[in-house]
Image (cartoon, rainbow, N blue to C red):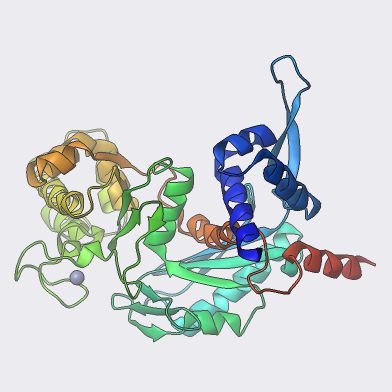
Length: 410
Ligand SMILES: [Zn+2]
C-alpha cells in the first residue's frame, strides 16, 4: 500500500511541478487516478506544506476553482558547477528562483579535489547564509562535475581523465562535511536535465543534449529518462572516434570528436591562422562579430561545422531522437550563427529516415546552467519519492523539519 501511495503522490507531484498551476480537476484528468484519490492525496500534501493553493480559475457557470502548485518555499535546493578554474554554488527555491550565488577560483592547474570539496562546502554555507534560510531547509545539494560519475557504490565517485581526477570519492568527501543530502552528476547531464525540464527539450521523450566547450559530451534522454549505461559512463560522445588514428585527444586516444570540435582545438587553429592569442573567448568572439568570415577563419569554421554535423549524424543514427539540442559555449555560438549549416551537415551524414524525424535546436537556457541543472537533482528525488522520506517508518520530511524549525525559533 505504501508503495502505491508513494507512486501516486509522485505522479501527482511530478505533473504539478512540470505542468505549472492546475486545478484539482485538471490534475484528475491528466493522471490515471480517481478524482477522489487526487483530492485526498492533494489534501495530504497541502497539509504537509508541499503543495499550496495559488489563485483561482473560473469554471463554466460554477464556482471558481482553486489552482494548486508545488509550494516554492517548502524547501530549497543548492546546485554547483565545478569548472576547470572555478566553483560556482547557487541556491534556488522550488519555483527555481535563484536566491543566492557564491563563486570561488580554483587556480590555473585544474581543479584539485581537496580544494574543490572545501570550496563546495564553503559555498553551500555561504548561499544558505545569504538567502537567510536554515541549513535543514535545504533538501539537497547537487554538484555538476567534468567527467564520469560512478553512482554504483554507496557514494558517487568521479573519474575525469581530462582534469586528472582518478576515482575521486567526491560524494564521500562532501558528506563528511555536511548533513545536507549530496548528489553528484556529470555537468553535461545536469545541463541536459535543465534543458529537458525548462528549456529546448520540454515536451520531448527522446532527446540528446550535446555540450560543446573545452570538453564535448552528450546527455541522452530515452523515454523521458537519462540514459546512463551500466556504470554511468554513457554519453561520452566527445570521445567517440571521428577520424581513425587522427589527432591526439586530451583523453590520450587519437581521432576523438573532441579533438576536432572541442573549443580548445578550434581556438588553437583560429589563433594560428590569425596570429591572435589563443584565449578562451576567441571562438565565441569571432562568431559573435557581425562581419563575414573570410579566408582561413571561414575554412576552419566550415570544417568544424562539418565535423559537428558528422558527430550529430552518429547520434541521429544511434538513438533516433525527436530532438538534438546544441549547448555549451561553443555549441551555442556555432548554433546561433550557423544552425542551418549544422543541420545540412548532419543531414549529409545521417540516414534519411531517422534524420527526417529529428529536429536540431539550440539550448534556450544559456551557457551557464550546470549549477541550475545540478539543483534539479534533489528536486528529481523529491518528485520521484512523492515528497515522502526514502526510508520506511520515518516521518515526512516537512514534519521533521517543522519540529526543528519551531525548536530553533522558540
Ligand atoms: Zn578523447
